[in-house]
Image (tube, rainbow, N blue to C red; front, side, top):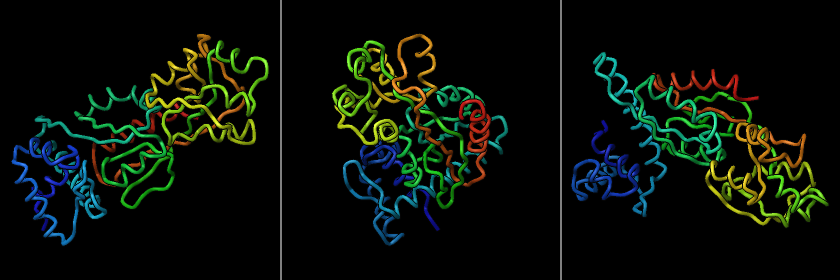
Length: 294
């Protein structure tokens, strides 16, 4: 039978991204934490943690971490139920894409936290990358573009965020005013991307131009500043309707390709366990999706 003190040491070292910080969190010496993980590896008969900087779980370590987090969640909820009104805070780790966090999901956070007494641990990744966090056992649920459920998880489609191409009026006049959008003008004008994994624009350019221009690119991994940069004329880029509507109405940005958009379908993935916190969050997401998404 697993000794969960040993498994906890593994989990905390991974969560804190180091033995020293993990030991401090557990109120143990670094040597004691190392010994616990070594004992766990001896019990399992394989290496669970790559001693890199920061430490990384092996495939077996990821499976064990996921198991531990599920057990911890269920135990915390059971304790709260047995103790009645003596509520304990429940940590809930989620993988959320930046655009959702900056718009509709961010508005849900007070409702979720106040209703369930949850301590949120939100990891921000591109919507195509959040699924990896769930697969690795780092989060209990995620919003992702992946439509297929992993083993031990369930999935529900939320809807689609529509992305369109925007710029300020001044930017449009300077770079596209006379010639419009073409491979040549799009390549010359500075473009803004969230990060190097961001590929939503590929589909739009193929729609408009038949191929992807050689873009001069700013990389800006902040949804809020991303919008500001476009409105201030620093560059042009893709925005979801949830972020662009008010700015269009205020005349701060314009749609560079009216009628052209890229739908990005989003799915809610979570562990298939009987967790009150996950069930409540799933219910809120389903209700919200009816008004937020297309």
